[in-house]
Length: 505
Ligand SMILES: *Cc1c(COP(=O)(O)O)cnc(C)c1O
Image 1 (cartoon, rainbow, N blue to C red):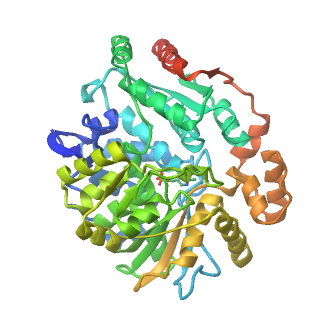
Image 2 (cartoon, rainbow, N blue to C red; image 1 turned 180 degrees about the horizontal axis):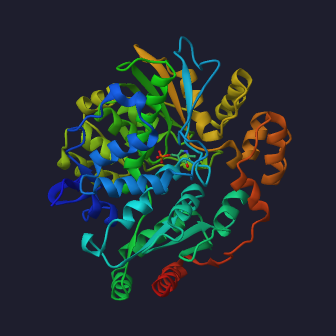
Image 3 (tube, helix red, strand yellow; image 1 turned 180 degrees about the vertical axis):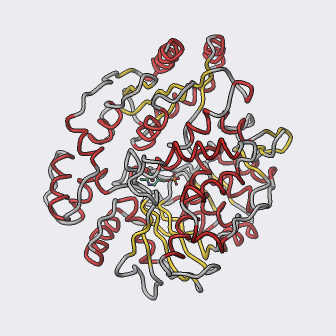
């Protein structure tokens, strides 16, 4: 028994441990709990709390079948000594707030973890949460995580799951279609339970093949007989979503300590968005008592979400653009389904119907009443590639602060969207280190743009008087462990081989 069930139906319920171990509900929906918001975080005491204490409170409310000891151990293992700052997700105050009549604006740096992208906050936690589940929570003794990546998720998942007890991880990426830094981040990964393989094809080919692997009943039976079950580390997993709720409260705590706001003041957040996981976590925080003025979705040229939030029509039948903000290049934002569930007051039938339409026609439209409700919570905007480059430049010129192309989408949107009345501060979530995308940053700042990523890092260091994170700079000389490349139809047997290997570890 438990409080989690599918966004598409309430007939089956389960505990948060089962939801985390199994990843996705059996009917294809996402796991949600109707208890969200029944317990409220005490805002007046936030200023006195560390990231660790806030994480303990928030995760305890969202994952109610984990003991306080289990959560405390997970939080410690995930964040103690693994992030650059004691604050884990530190705020930086901008000298000049972007946009007319804007209140004080801060950047929350979410990229201080081992792979320099915000996905570390969640992917340092997910393996620890999974490690506290067991075969009785569903599946077999061991878990094999299988992930297709366009670049960032793969490395963050590898870093999180490397040598995690009872699990293995296999990552597939499109060969020749990730940057040199991204490629080296994955191919140099250490750990006895990791496997990395390029595929001949593009990201969609890899993603579709992984979905087929999950649906392959015969493969599942063979693996289960050998004591292994497949699972996913992408952002539909509850265990990836809930750690992200914490930093919205942590931002508020830092604003209180800085004297920028008083307890109860409303704050506006702008979030560079792809799969809608990061911003949905902000909505969870709002439901749990955080005074949020508005949550602003920032998209890149793939602006399907900005269109949806403006018109109520979600339509993925449109060209797909590969941009300089690759982690936001996405046309199906999976976590939107959870938002629709909560804002329709838990109307599973409505959600199931919309998702069916999306699968059949690539399009759906929400009722006007629901759209109005959504618009009262979420704002939106988007940036073309030229606007992204201009935002990197104008942030640098105004503040002497370099942002990456994903964060720059949000900066541009803050420049464009009028602040919500009553918002006492604005926070821009920064999702990656500029050094993950050094060539795009050099280009935007009008510097030389060397062909080689590592040369570009040095140019960026010189010009901005900042230092590349050591874990990125050192990749240039790290030994490569994986050079496997396979065809799409060989991926299943690659996973099976990797599963055999972890079974004998
Ligand atoms: C994944 C990612 C995003 C998008 O986050 P979602 O939770 O998918 O909306 C934005 N920026 C960077 C750098 C990312 O890696």
